Amino acid sequence: MMFILYNLLFFIGFILYFPFLWLKGKVHGDFLTRFGWWPAALSADLQAKENIWIHAVSVGEILAVQGFIAQLKERYPRHRIVLSTVTTTGYQLAGSKFKDIKIIFTPLDFNFAAEQYVRRIRPKIYINAETEIWPNLFRALQRAGVPIVVVNGRISDKSLGGYRAIKFFIKKILSWVNIFCMQNQEAADRIIELGALPAKVRVIGNMKFDDVLQPKILAPQDLGLPGGAWLWVAGSTHPGEEEIVLDVLRSLSREFQQLRLVIAPRHVERTDDVLNVVRQKGFSPLKFSQLTQAPWEPNRVLVVDTIGQLRSLYGLAEVVFVGKSLTAQGGQNIIEPAFFGKPVIVGPNMQNFQDITELFKKAGAILQVKDAENLKYELERLLNDPGRRKLMGTAAREVVQKSQGATARTMNVVGEILKV
Image 1: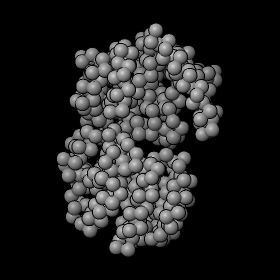
Image 2: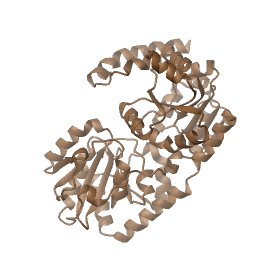
Image 3: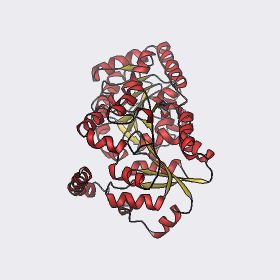
Image 4: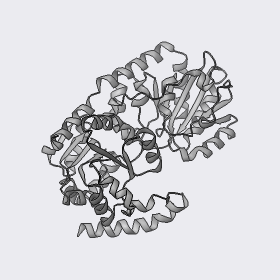
């Protein structure tokens, strides 16, 4: 009965949401494949090998499992990795990161679409990154006898509230999962609260700490940075945050004439909006895709309009602000700049990374500001104190190093199931 109601609500929601998808240009050439309507050649290609199916919803989840995917390929060379993702940006990033795995869009969670995917991929195992629950897909996998493993599992505050409201439904779906590899004890407790059997739940750690794949190395001259320039990288920004960092830059530019700003919006499709904001604030914007080695004048602000460059820029930064934490809620990944030993500033809204944020705060490796004025104050203090910047960066790097090992433990779990 519950699945009948779920399918009815999902269908109504899809019909109502489809015009928005169309207007936003989300209905692209591959959209029909999400219904399970695949070209014959694609189906034949997928069935040519034994497949390990990994699902990662978008950019953050794909980056979190890229080291894990590399180890899977090494340990199971006769298997082919099939990576599914929801977003176009995730699909594009996966295409740039992985040249020898099959990348597809995740099925829409219609019963017929889920069954078609499972029938055509015929996975030996389905690995779900960070606890995305798709009822019809999980049921199709369970009916086909495919083991389901959740890796890097977590339950955000927002998701927990929603799942609690339908616990009687979620509990059944969770019973089909073979093993939950959760990031920490809080995540483990939450999934058990929602109905997972404690015997299936393990605290493995966060694979994002193991993401040591080095990005393309950038040199200061690649950006046109003059000698002695300090790079401030504002990464994964959301609407409203660009205005804040630009105002802070304006207020500090006289005291710190060597300061240069990079803005990397979380969604590259916002690039034109960000460029307009930069102009409105009286600065001269330059797209990363149009970058030359011409000298970087103080009034220029670099806007990242490509996918996969942020890590390289973190490596050059003097100080980092991580967005979706001032004007939006949830936060973004702070492990990436910490890996490079950079002092990190975030806003008050880090709900989706609360445990990681507390870990860094206890180590003195991060600054959490209250608002725009507090951001200006703390950034000015950091820029005036090179010793403190170094101490924070060193502490951040040490937190990352001490928290590593989850990928190897997750590989052991997969080995228990595949037994090859």
